[in-house]
Length: 114
Length: 118
Image (tube, rainbow over all chains, first blue to last red; front, top):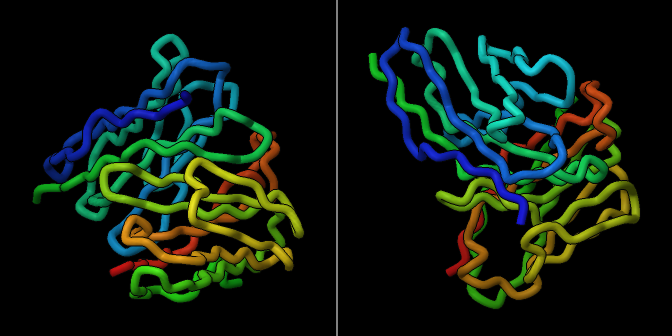
């Protein structure tokens, strides 16, 4: 079955430090890849997405992600984390490309230390 | 422009009771989705709709029914609630699913409904 894995359930970084959140998906044709962020008590907000082309994509709030086909990965990065980045982050994949059905990873909770 | 709204925000049910969750969007989106979010499991797709009058099953459809009588509304029903349906429910919508690289296929999410079944 198609699946999406976020290996890190919880990550803690210091404010100003760099961040990388991992996302791997099960093998298949190049899927469509997304990262969402969820602040406590809120819905999900799209950070960025990859469909094709340049494998390094830029998103909102200073985030970027790199698609690596050979590793079936789509890791999210930010060079300098701000306290307001504390939230839960979800990687999502559309394997079907014709229904918009997303499969989500389990989520990674980011805690930012002052 | 309110985006995607969900009613109610919170609800407590007893086992066996029924209820309907309402999702409304004012963006003229064709596609709408219902997800449930459980700790450690991310979001899982319950049902979705690719247009007015259509519905289809997602990953975890059992125990739920949906209807899309109007383009702007997508209703999720629980006919006989069970404790296993205690969850946070999110609705989402998108203009299309055509992965053209444009913004039209981005899914926009509502704020969620927290449901507890006792």
